[in-house]
Image (cartoon, rainbow, N blue to C red; front, top):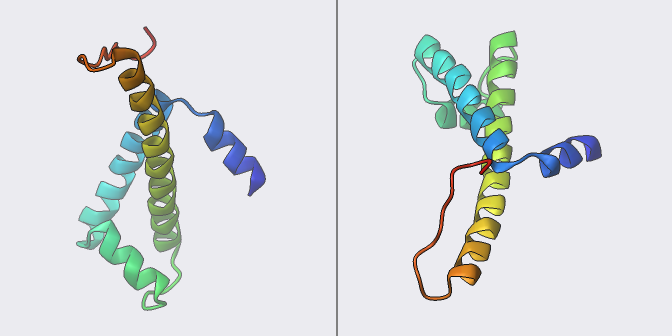
Length: 100
């Protein structure tokens, strides 16, 4: 688990955003296939109400990965916004394109 945490910690905001969008596509396909939004599926899955099929294990993994990435993104985004606010004082924030 430590290796995964170190990997996530090294990710840039742009990587996390790209990764999250990829996970969104995987989750959307499963939601359409089974007619259930991921949050509702995950609640039933964690409660043991669903069988352990390959699709459901994969779906739970995608959902958990998305939750982890969103939490890390929020942390990195808040740090970045704090830095931008510190630099701007009371002025407008200077938000440059990623990688600039």
